[in-house]
Image (cartoon, rainbow, N blue to C red; front, side):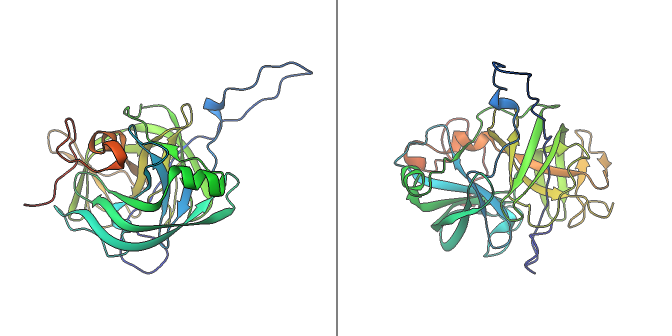
Length: 283
């Protein structure tokens, strides 16, 4: 994993989504093309100092709730969590550059708390910001991205939207890796992108958006850069029988649907909630 271009040793890259063209019909009254097949814009994405991210709304989120920013666990400015480490309710001070739909800077939002972060089983960080969704909408006219409560589907066109680079990457979901191992970390049921997704450092933490629904189905996190086996920046796949395979230059993301099960009213983390399978901190 490669955190970004900022000279901090951290992690992963990225990927995905197919840019689907919109064809114009002749003359006057052609029906509008469904928005579900349009390439996602930059609205709601953010740039971190070393990675990408997005403002996300969960299943139970309400306009008056503190807005959450989703990125990778390996993008923490405090350093990458070790294998088995889980960060919960940790004070921090971090600014995010919020982007308009066209990729221009809308302004800054701030976080003073990491609600949750880990690189065990998955690679995510969720920051609680000091602004509510309503305040962000009123000040900047920007809506948060919705986190899909359903699993991503193989074959679906997706877009990885990088706030750091203000660039999109298009491909499709190629399939899922039962286990993805990189150095000391192992992730479960990772999204494997088709080879169209050739991303770069700084796209870590980008939302992976399903072009059909416009919802976030994953967070971009790593890429086999050199064809090596299970080393840093060179993840390998491990199947149910323990067999290892290497897919040179393939990029991957982590599914995000299960986050919805772990946050309740007020966007408050509840790791004991029914159906929540996010790793818990050590007792």
